[in-house]
Image (cartoon, rainbow, N blue to C red; front, side, top):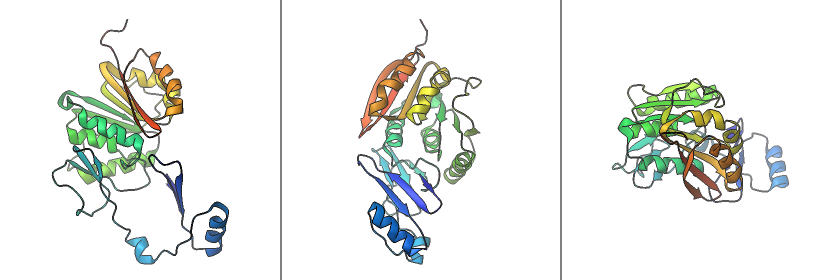
Amino acid sequence: MNGPGWALTERPNRPRILLEVYTEQRDVAHSLAERFGGRVRLLQAKEWFSPAPVAPTRIGKRLEIVHDNTAKQACAALPRLHIPHGMAFGSGDHATTHLLLGALTRWKSWKETTFLDLGTGSGILALAARLLGARKIVATDFDAEAIRTARQNETLNFNTPLIKWCCADVSRLRGLARYDLVVANLFSGILTEAASSIGQSVAPGGQLWMSGVHRSQQKEVAASYRHQRLRLIRVVSKGKWIMVQWEKPLRLT
């Protein structure tokens, strides 16, 4: 998460967040350091315009996310996406995104799969689904800026557009089609509030994978989706975050 003059980073498996503030006023910088801790560093112009290379994010042995134009650390043998670090959430570094990417690389039926990405952010999950061979892909986000960024990222990675990018509220999905695989990387509160809408977007026999769920909120979120007649398949954890996988029976009883 970032904004004008500052950046907030939550790091997987670490109890503290990292806050970076950029200012031209030295007294402001030293005042913040005195109040909250940390250190003040003078940033040279060449560092600002030519940031240090960022190492690629590898998802097991099946996928690699490259964040800049540095190719030295990249593995040419792996399927690769180029997702620059930027305003939209979803570079693949965070545990919630990493869990879903790992699960996507293990999905076996891509050529027959219709795919819905809820809360797409940078578009990384939808783009991974395209790279892996999904038949039809729709990706939504309530933030128009995220949709614009995601569309740019598709252009960066593919020669022709294929994904349908939609600016939409996740709680209003009733009119959309049903999908074989639905992924939702959203805050627990949104997942709970939109359970009915999200549950109805899953086709009979299809699956729903949700991430963004903190361990302490697992029971509350799970209860909301059991009411949608979904069957729990698996819970996978990474640090304090979990991914929950559900399946919708072919016949509802």
